[in-house]
Length: 593
Ligand SMILES: Cc1cc2nc3c(=O)[nH]c(=O)nc-3n(C[C@H](O)[C@H](O)[C@H](O)COP(=O)(O)OP(=O)(O)OC[C@H]3O[C@@H](n4cnc5c(N)ncnc54)[C@H](O)[C@@H]3O)c2cc1C
Image 1 (cartoon, helix red, strand yellow):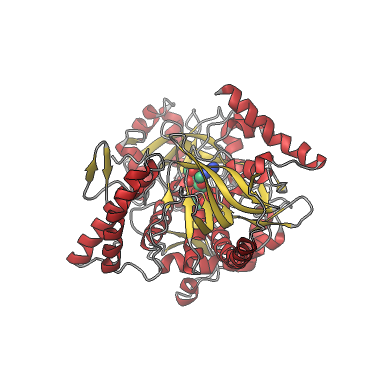
Image 2 (cartoon, protein in one colour; image 1 turned 90 degrees about the horizontal axis):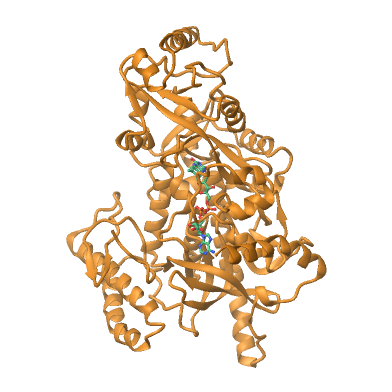
């Protein structure tokens, strides 16, 4: 296992040829499946990655020991030559040391999930110099955990393959799910750019051409991999590969602690590494892509107390840091009280069983072995029905269906999914009455034969559950995400309480509110992250270009305003009152620690 605890790296899956330096192990990222390299460039890529990772790790440590850093620069030059020989990309950035006080990038992205990676890539492709901060040991965030689909309409892929999916219906469905609280302009922006986002991901090499219908609607807008990856690992993987190709530095174990201001303009971030080293990174534009707060007991207790008691499916990195940062510069917020539940979380593993598993044929049984809900009803309704049935249920699925679902395969290997070769065995697994279980299955098979669910009006029933072994897994509802966050416009500019953009600050993904409103249509969070991440990359790069000119002018005139930390700047009364929502939580955290 790699250990990047003391530094930063170009992180990716921990496999390949290890280079051991002291207690640290560096590995090269896997080669993109689609682009097998010839032996020479393969070797050079390996050297480039290991040397560059080694250099960067040493570089951070050497903020304390400058001599080591200087010694390493020789290695850096050699690495740069190898990068050139390896001919990765004309856009590749030179390796940098962001802890150097003289360092300034065009676009600083906080958070290396789907939104952050998309923003970083697009900004870099627009010619901006880019740096990404990620507080966790590895990039990916909640994006990496996604097990269902990404939704898109209007893609080239759909047009070329004559696949029906209406953008109008998609837009209406998102607005309906949001219970009147979504911002129609943001929804329209997401839907209008969803096809481009899908084409972009596929163009980068993502395997996403397994297209599926939204159950019972004839709308073919759900995409997932054909191969054995989950949608999240496929998308996170392809974005990380592109980030690596563009040589965009990603500082893992590095948390954004505060925003830096020059006047009212956000011009950087105060960062802190896991080992307590603090440094300011200056930037012409900052993109917040820190995800939601379904992993923060403190924020949930404040905004949605009932949710604070629930199991959470989210990455431990989802603690609402972006909200606290934006709050310090008087950003406006919306829908902070709105949370999402997923009905089928597996408590012992934290995995989520995607809705598609139910769409493909799985059913839900209560502790008595009886069906109790239309399994394809909206997540909130299924979650509520499970709660009313003792807060857990058994998801039952057949042999054929599980073969195509990586997350189930994983759970089988972990021993959390039980095979049953007969109805009696299935009942035994569930501690249920065998007669009740047999009766339930006979009745359900009859509905499948007739094509009509007379009990719960389930719209589609793709399996009659007669293909043994059947598999049973215990599931319960979990807190799955937050839809509230900072208010943005369609250019992803963060707006203040007066509706004015805060200069230099952009946000994308689950840190924002208003894209979904009170609730999120299934499988649209990835669309949100990629679409708005791309928009943020483009908008921040354009802004940074202008800001760089101003910065150069001000520096020449020597009248640059002194940078200040947002947390130290005095606020207006209104702003101060609202800010207390987050500030009190910070002091509570500090006391708890
Ligand atoms: C189990 C699960 C399954 C899901 N399945 C689906 C699905 O099938 N389809 C779908 O559309 N959506 C799905 N979602 C939702 C979707 O994955 C997320 O909403 C989306 O990926 C969020 O992307 P993001 O980039 O905004 O945030 P994230 O991917 O969470 O990335 C945020 C990153 O910011 C980092 N960060 C936070 N604070 C800081 C800080 N102060 N400094 C530096 N870094 C910081 C975090 O560590 C994290 O890496 C699922 C979510 C979960 C939890």
